[in-house]
Length: 209
Image (cartoon, rainbow, N blue to C red):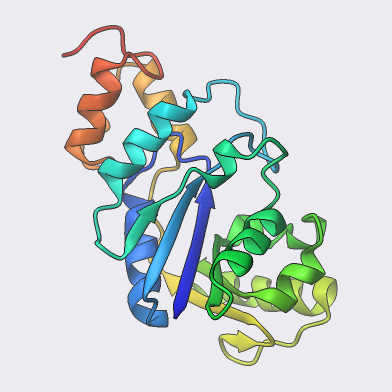
C-alpha cells in the first residue's frame, strides 16, 4: 500500500493545504494519507498556536477525502514531534507500506537540518510541493545537489520527487493576521472552518459573526 504522510501545524488549515494534498494523492497514486497535526512545531516558532484539540477539529473539517485520515500520533506522543519518530511508528504498524513524506518547498530547503534526515531519505520518498516556476524548481534541484548530494533530473531524483503547483496566495500566518485586523478570509478557508474559528474565538475572533 502507498501511504502518504502530511504533517504540519495547521494553524489553521486552509484551502492551499487541501489543494496540495489532493493533487499529490492523485499524482502519486496514494492509497491513503495520514494528516498529522504537530504538537510542538519543530522548525518554526508560533506565538498564537491554537490548542491541539482545535487544530485537530479544524483538520477534520478541512480534509474530507475518504483516503485521508487525521492522526493524533504526534500530539499523543510524549516526545518531540520529530518526523523520523512518526515514520518509524508507521513502519512498525504498517511494515509492508511504501511511505511518501509530503512537504512544502520551504521545509525542503532546510531538510538537511532535520533530525536524522538521512534516515528519512532511506525510509521514505520525499515529495516536494513546489511553486510552478522554472526558478523555483531550479532552486530545489540545486539545493538537493549541494546539501544532500542528490541529482534531480527533471522532477525526480533518488527518493525525491518535485511536484509543481500553482502557488496559493495566502499562508496560515497571513490568515491569522487578517483575522486580527478584522479582514475577511472567505475563499481562503472552508466555511465550516471559519465558523469554527468564530465560535471558538480563535486568532482574534471575539464573537460569532
